[in-house]
Amino acid sequence: MSVAPNVDPKVDGAPKPRILDTAELDRMAMHFVGNMNRYRENIIIPKSNGPVKIKTNEEKLIETAVESCAFKSAMACVMGYGLGAALGLFSASVNPNMADPFANEKKQTAREVFREMRGTTHSYAKNFALIGAVFSVVECTIESQRGVTDWRNGTYAGGITGGLIGLRAGIKAGIIGGLGFAAFSSAIDYYMHMR
Image: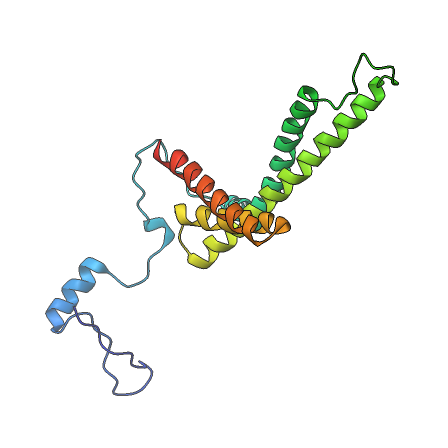
């Protein structure tokens, strides 16, 4: 199917744009295809899983906001804080830092135990929130740059996040942390997508 080159129809003597070579085939194509304008009412959506409803502009706006990198990283930060708080509370309750009960030293009061639990819980929560936010921002940035949603995004993000966390202890720890976090992210992505 050939289309005439871009010609300004306002210029006198310019040929009309055509779809096919001969006038009869061109009329037949225009009869079946119609003009080149397509309207929203002409969209046919198959009903495979119940009734189909076209999204309103408000629904599209909310969907765009929820799928943005800022929202994803904020949610990862909040959920990481909650998970870290739960793990920190469990860790503090299982392994309290108490003195020997049979020694003649001063016994710990309930207030001191709760203060220690609060510190441990808050410490775990901050660390998990930081890890969740960094991983989410890096993954979303990589996904936006690559333009593809696949398992590699999580692997690359895990490697970068683990490397950044491990760099606080040195280069070797950064490399080991990056490799370990990348392997863990790949395993989680494989499990979540292949089950």
